[in-house]
Structure formats: structure tokens, C-alpha cells
Image (tube, rainbow, N blue to C red):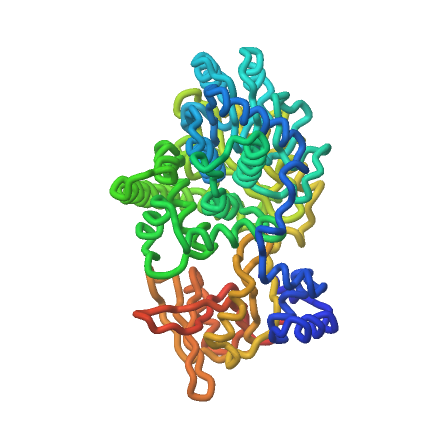
Length: 573
């Protein structure tokens, strides 16, 4: 693991300290993240809804909003076709709650991952339009489905695509294409989740209805702030960068969850065992998101949608318990597939390729994306994990990439071996004949070798600052927390403890983790090193630790601790 220390403009940091009244430590971290302007730093620390852009700056937004408003006024039927991941489920729930609250005749269809596949399914679209459908809104899908969109359009149904995926060479041609990555779109924040696009559509619809005089004393305007909890969950779960607009949406969404959560969100907190403390962005990514996703991975994503739109507390608790069971099943299945994939990858030994395409017909398709991420982390190279579809026998799977390698570009160079592909630079999905796996593996490897260098294949940990362990206390943690929400694009800061002696350590959990303790002038600082039991032999001598500062809250007693990201012998520079 290579340690990379971040540099920053110390003069700019001093100016931020002076004008904002923050500590030098916090000012350094702000400047490192690019907030050298004092006003930019102030906005970062205090994200406000007043800063969000006008929905009309997104291409086709006004056209879409007016069409939906027409449908609402005329009582026309509307259907929502959502993807089965968290972004798709939260987008579907958001539009259903908003439109249903306005009295719309609206239905929701969420496909079965294993039966209907990814994206729009032609048969399902036909079934929807056969029900005298006037408007079809697709969420988190549709941009890359020209044939399926045409089925609805040709039947007289107006299709509104709400998406954020890359635009293919031959995109769909719906009534309205709401996608911020369109080349002709002036929306200032293109890297947003589909659920954020859906939220802006709701704002635009409300504005159109207001201008038409629809609202009044007996028909008040809906408060869209209650929907921000869904925007926050979908944004974090879809690993959008938590800067700019996304930071505003997640920050405000967390406030909504902690102030007045919906019944579904409250049930998720209880099921996750965090009902006694505020919900954080990490909870959305590592507790709520996996539970919503588990339904779509193991059985059907409808369970997650039902929880996020439920109107009865008892039903909400039962749905959350069911998702807990699904999530445990997902964990067990993931572990089994991961163990096999790790063994398969390790067989390359010194001849490790620049990219990994691992395939086994028995691997569960619901967990291939998660396993691809784990293998990518372990070997630091683009990785695809493939299983076999239970009915058509095709190989299907997901890929995760590293910095510097665009998966979609890699798939375009491998397209001769694929029947379908799509996604983002860092996450993508593929379908291919099982007999084409070797050809795909070779084509992807050839492209990887043309793009990547050996240095790109070495894992690294980025260090924000060196820190004396004696500086770590609860006040220091609380100041760091002013930079939350943390996640993609705004990672929790990593600090380097140099040349420290470990007073004690022991294996914990299943034996693969280490509990550590430092002693400094009579003070003790505790830490945890997940999955690093094999590093125990290093701890008899002074070491350097790369750590993140965390909070421990045990029976109401709060303290600062650290979580180890990397261990190396002292003085390894």
C-alpha cells in the first residue's frame, strides 16, 4: 500500500482560519479539498437549499413538467418504471409520494432483476401501455433503451426519461429526456443521481401548477422538503460525489430524516440498531442502502419501495424486518461468492493481469456487483464478476473500476464479445454469451494494458495530514464532523500517526480484526484495524498508522477513537 501525502496552500489556509474562525487543522483540510476561497469554504460548511439551481436549466425540464401537470389536471393515468437499485427505488418512491399526494392516478412498476433484466424491458413496457397509459416516467433507466421507449411513444404514450447515465451513440427519443449529462444541457451539476433529477422534476411540476392557479386554501402546495430524505439515500447509495449540489441535498436530507422521518425511514433506523442516535451519511451507505438493495438482489426490489412509501407503522416495522432477513441472506451469499472469487484471482499469483474477468455459472447474480467491488479493492485493478442467468444461460455480471480506467470505454472496445452493456466510468453491467467470456476477458485486458501502467495497479492511501495522537479528543472529532456528510468526493480525513508504539493489541471479532491501544502521558487512545490481524507481527516495533478519527458512544459515554486504514513499519518513506 502506497502512502500519498496531500499538499496544500498554507497561506490560503491561514486566511480561512482568520476569516472563518476555524482551527488551523480544519482550515488545512478545507483548503486541501479545494475550498481556498473563504466564501466557498463557508458554503461548504453551511450548505443551504437556497443554493440549488433552477430546474428549468435542465434540458426538457419545462416540457416534462408541463406534460405531467396536464396529466394531473386531466386525470390521465401515469406509470413509473423504476430500476431495481437504491437510486431507482428511491426515485420511484419520491415520484409516487409526490404525484400521489396531488391526487394523481399513478402506478409503479419495478422490474425483477432476474426475469426482466436491467433497463427497460420491451414486454413490460407493452403491458403498461396496453392499460390506456397516457404518461410513462422511467427513472434511473431509459436513456439507452431506444427500442423500448419507441414502443410506448408509438402507442401514443408520452415517455419522460429521468436518468443520469451516459448518453450512448443512439439514445432513446422520448417525449422528454431529463438527463444532466446531455451535451445540450445547461444544468450546472451534471454528476447527480436519478433521484435528484426526479426531485427537480417535482419542483418544476409544482411551479407549473402554482402558475396555473391549482393551489389554494383547500388544495395547499405540497412541501417537497419531506422528499429530501429519499434524495439523500439515493445519492449516497449510488456513490455520487458529496460536493456542490449533492452535498446540499444529502445534508438537508439528513436533517429531514433526523427531524421528522417518514415511517419507512424510522423503521430502517430501528432495524439498523441506530434509533438512539442521529442518522449519518455513513448509515445511508452502509446500513439503509444495503437493506433496500438486498430485496432487489435476493428476491424483488418491491419490498424496498413498499417500505419507503408505507403509511402504517406496524407494516413499516414488518417490512423493515423482512429487509433485515434479506440483507443477512445477501451477506451469506456474498461471502460464499467472494471466497470463491478471491481463490480464483489468487491463482494468477505473479502473473496477475491488468484487469480481472472472473466467471462461475453458479455465482448469484444479485451479489456480483458487491463482489466486484471487493475484488477491485483487494487487487486494485478493473474487475468484472460474472454469473450465469438461470433461464437464458447467458453470462451476466457487473464491473468496478479504478481511477484512470473508464469501464464504459473499455466495454466499447470489447463490444464484439458483448450482447449488452452500460453504466458509468467506475461501475458497469454486461451481458454476453457464456462462450464469449474468454474473448471478452482478452479484449478487456488488451485495452487495459493500452491505458494503464504498473503504478496504476498499486493500491494507495491518501493522507491528509500528520497528527500527534495526543491531539485526538472528542472536541477534535466534533470539529472534523463539521465537514460531514462524508462519502465519495468528500472522504473522511485520513491522518498519519508517525513512529508510534502500540501499548497493547488483541484479535477481536472473528479473529481477523485488531483492537489497538496507544498510551500517551497517562492518556489512552483506542482504535480498531478491520481485517488486519495479519499485521500483528509489525506491532512489536514502532509503526506508522494511517487513521480516521471516529466516535465511540458506549452507554452514553462518548469518546474519540481511531480506525486504522493502513499499517507500516515506522520510517518507511
